[in-house]
Image (cartoon, rainbow, N blue to C red; front, side, top):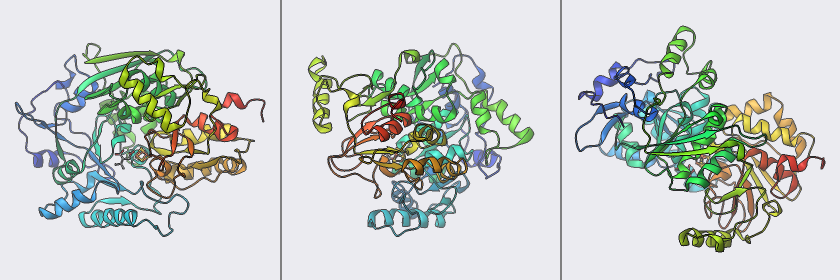
Length: 507
Ligand SMILES: CC(C)[C@H](C(=O)O)[C@@H](O)C(=O)O
Ligand code: SF4
C-alpha cells in the first residue's frame, strides 16, 4: 500500500463530513484525492489510501468503510456484542441486510422447518429492526443474494470500501471496489464504528491477453486462472485483473471473475472501472442522475493502477488458448478442459498435490483417464452469486430454447435476486425454462451451499454453476462439478457433462 498518513482524523469528523446520497449511502471519502495522483500506485493502494482514518507505525491502518452488507449467517453474535457493550450502530444508513442463505426457493412465504434457519432469520429481523438497519426480507422485491443485490441496486460504486460477513464479498471488486469478507468480531467493529483496523495487503496482477474463444465464458476463465495459480496462489494479495480479455467482459462476467478470487486464496479481486462499468451504473436506483452522475463518473475514472505501479506478483494468461472447463476434484483448482480426461494422480510430481488428487478422485468416485464428457450427473444447479445473474439465465435460455432437459436430471434454476427473477419473467425466459421442463425458483443461495432444503442425496453428482466444490458442499457425500452456465445448461439436456456445441444436431 502506498501508506500515506492522512493525519489523525477522528472518526466522528469524517462521518459528518460525508455527503448523503440518494439512499443516504455516502460517496467514498475523498480525503487524499489528488495525493494519490502520485505515480506508482496500484488501484488497491489508491482506494486504501483514500480511506485511511488513522495510520501509525507498528499498527494496523484504521480504514473507513463505505458500505456494510449483512446476511442472516454470521451476524447474530456481532449484534449480541453490541448489545452487551451498550453500543449503537454508527451508520445504519451505510448498512444493509438481506436474507439469502437459508431461505426457501420453492415458496418464499412458506413455513421454514429448520429451527436453525428460523432462528437466524429471526435474529437478523430483530437486530435490523432494533438498530435501524434496512433489511430485505423474504417477500421483498429487492431481496436476493447479498453480492447480487449490492451491484444491481447501484450501491456498489467504484472507489468504495465494502465489507460483508461473507467470503465472496470479493464479487464487488468488479466495480473497482475494495471489498472483503470479514468475520463476526469485525462485523461488530464495523457496526459500532464504520471503520476496520486492517493490515496492508500485497498486490497481485493477473493479465489476460487475447480474446476468449466463442463458447468460453468468464467462469471458464477464472477456473483456468485458479488452476494455474492454485488455491493459495493469491494468499495475502488483492488480485487485480487486467488485459484485453478482462476489458471485453460485461459487468456480470467481471463479477464472476472477482467472485472466485477468494478461491485462489486472495483477500479481494479488483477490476478498474471503465466505460463498461460506468454504462452499467447509469440509471441504477442508488446512482445519482444528471450532472451529479457525470461528476461521479469523473471521480470513478481516477481509480486505476498507474502504468509504473509495482505488483508483488504477476501472472499472464492467453485467453485465446482456453476452452470450457469442468472441475474433477474437491477444490476449484482441480479443473480441466471439458475436452480432457480425469487426470492421473500418479503423473503428479508434487506429493501433496498427488495425495490431494487421490483423495479427491476417491470422493468424486472418478477414475483417472475417464473422459470428462462421459461423466453422467443426477442434478444440475444453475444459480449463486457466481452465476445467478440475468446474463447467465439468458445464456441458459439460449441453450434450452426448443429442447427439454433430460428426465434423469433434477434441475434447480435459482436466480441470484428477485430482480433477476422478475427480469427473466419480463424477458420471457421463464416460458423457455418451463417449455424445457424447469421451474424458475425464487432467489437465494440455495444449492450453492445447501443451507436450506435444496440439497441432494448422499452420493449424488451435480454439475453446478457455483464457486465451491468442497466435500459435502451441496449435501453430505454429494459430488460437485463446477461449470459455466452454458455447460450446466447443455449438461441438463445431455444428462452428462456437455457443451452447447455437443447438442447441435441432437435437437
Ligand atoms: C455462510 C457464509 C458465511 C459463507 C461464506 O462466507 O462464504 C457462504 O456464503 C459460502 O459461500 O460458503
Ligand atoms: S451464493 Fe453461495 S457463494 Fe454466494 S454467498 Fe451464497 S452461499 Fe456463498
